Image 1 (cartoon, rainbow, N blue to C red):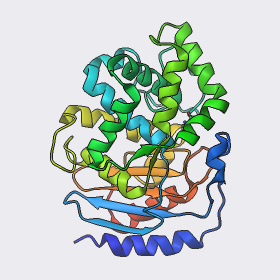
Image 2 (image 1 turned 30 degrees about the horizontal axis):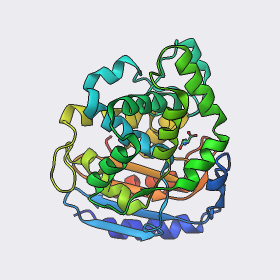
Image 3 (image 1 turned 90 degrees about the vertical axis):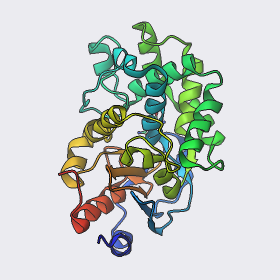
Image 4 (image 1 turned 30 degrees about the vertical axis):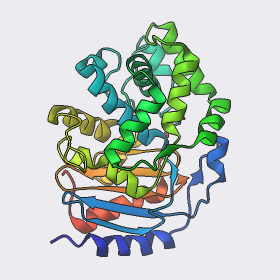
Length: 304
Ligand code: GLN
C-alpha cells in the first residue's frame, strides 16, 4: 500500500528547511501581500482518502489553475467547437507572451496561456446567462462546497494593473477572435483567476480529472474523452515554458498559478495540491515543484 501520509510528512520537513529562492508575484499588487514562507500540501486518492501537511487549509488566489476549470465548462457548453478558436500546442513562451498570437493570426497556442484563457472566457461570457455566478456555481458543485468565493480585492487589483491582458484581449479582438467587448471578457477572466481556495478544496474540485469525469459525489460532468484532452493539455501546457521541466522532474499532468498553487494528478490514482507563494523565474512555485518531484520519486508513481 502507498504510504502517502509518511511521504507528505517527510516532504514537508525537507521543503520547509529549503532556502526561499523564489519571489512572490507582485505584478498583481494584492498578491504581494502574502507571506513567502507559507507551504501546504494536500493529497486525495481515488477512494477519497485525504492526506495533508502544513498550510493546506489556508486559502490563496488560485489564478491560472482556474483556466482548467473554465476550459472544462466551455467544453460542457460547446464541446469540440472550442478547438476552432484555440489551438492545443505548447507555446514554449511565458504565460502572458503576445508575439505568437500575432504571428498566428489571433489563434492562441493553447487554452492555458493567458490569451487562450481569455478566448475561453469569451466563450463562457457568450454561453452563460450570469457568467460570474454560473462559473462560481460550477466550481462549488464540483467541490461540493458552497464556501468557495472570488476574492474581489484580487480581481480589482488585477483589473487596475492587467495591461498585458488588455493588450492580449485587444489583439484577439482585432483578429476577430473575441465576440464580446474587451472589458466584459476581462472582468470575467479577472474574477475567474481570483477564486480563493485552499489545497484541500483544489483536490476536491480536481477529483473529476482522476475519476473519469465524475466529481466526488459520483456525478458525471465531463466525458472520458474530454478528460483525456484536458489532462493532456495540463501535461503539455500547464506550466508554460516550464512544461518540459515539470514533466521531466515530476511526470504528472498539472497546472500552476501565480498565487503559488500547483495541482497535479495521476488518473485513477490521486490528485495533489501544493501551495508555496514564492515563484521561480518562469512563474511557477519553486517549492511546490520541488515537493511534487519528491512525491513522485518517493512514491514511484507518475504517468511514466
Ligand atoms: N491572472 C493572472 C494573469 O493573467 C494569471 C497568470 C498565472 O497564474 N500564470 O496574469
